[in-house]
Length: 616
Figure 1 (cartoon, rainbow, N blue to C red):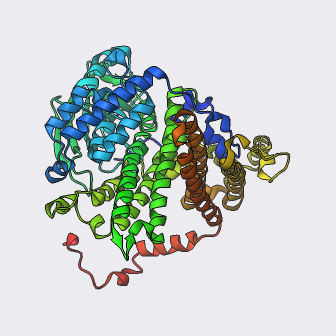
Figure 2 (cartoon, rainbow, N blue to C red):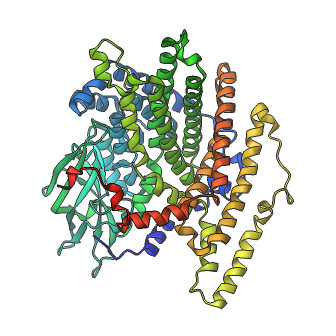
């Protein structure tokens, strides 16, 4: 389903999508450029008292509903969220958490929306998927950002109350490359609408949706600029059919579909924004929605902490609780500290999102990447702590008289988060482009082999001007005095590490440009390590800042927060040090060569002795 949208055009659309935020300050962007701009995240904004009152009241009602009416084992058995649960969420207003009150929603802040997803995700991840797909990337987000007032008045009250929404973007041959969308939207001869044709894959909520946003390509013609465009439409429109409800390793209650659109007539007034803005709308929607993923992951890591604590205190082996044995104690500490670090990052990002005076594209993307990766490691360690009971289903545990602790369910459900809304590999490339785009752009201009000599000279001058702005930071200590961060007490040493690490990261990026030149953009493993270093530095800074925020807002927890923040920062620093060492000292080239030989069939003998029945 190839389109005539080139990679250059796709990049331009991405640039346009972030244009409105480009001039806003960005902590993450500065961090990758060697500047620790701590004032961008500290002190954290005070929570609005009215927003807190509204948010806490909703969380109280939501907690009661989940406790009294949701049975996660039933969802696992039936592979479906009961209609009574969905109806109850509608009555609570959970479908409209992020929709402004003037359109019939609750108008919760990002902080409390994410806290609600954390709570829901701790009960069953498919509930989090239902609500986040509906609100984080569903109909509401595209309309709030790009819809006309008429569209908002018509559609937002519906999705805020009782109409479930979905976002139809992915196709069988189109995953993380939305520029290749093949679904078409052909203008009608009378100019009053469009006719949609195509197939959409993996549409979360697509099996039960009432309203959807569809991405489709409008052909260029007289009076039509064409291009990928976004449409909002009633899911009951003639020509729309759900061909299949997909089933997965985890998320047993998810309503995920293959949806076919055959000669679907859509009124012209259902076009969101303008023709050709679909990719911009999709990218903006995904950027905004990514904070839902770390919120859901946090629900699992918090639950993992509780399960590990209770089990390790009551389970006795060799004369003492297993939590007293060092091997298990190390895992418990890792689980608890990692959960704190993830909560810190999410809180920092959420408050910045509510403040609306920050460009948080990089931070939100890192939150998704970091939350899914560290969340996976946390629940994997939890399975190990629980041993055989960690591998046994909650239903089986209950049947033989034990507590139905859903450890294996947590593991299965967590795995998708490393793929959802941009796989880890795609997120590495996305963040690299966002975070070090200025470096890569200069490298491309200077080092592309086909660039004319005169152009190279011009590019060299441009590069010199650019790097002169921050070149002192490429040399340790040149004209720069380390900050003391004395107001952070014992945690100050970790911020000093971030400050040094940020400068080292900028140097490392600069050196990588010199070493790999124009090939750097294709060195995805190298870029991945650079991004992961930045993520660890952001996580450390967030943990320190959040610990001080807790000291301000919940002083009774100050000492405990300090201990968790300190351990998390120590662990994150060790991970960052390893990543720094592996940027240039790695086996990437050897591994790539072997991979190509595998693809060429040179090692098929290594596959002997097995039977692949899926091929028969």
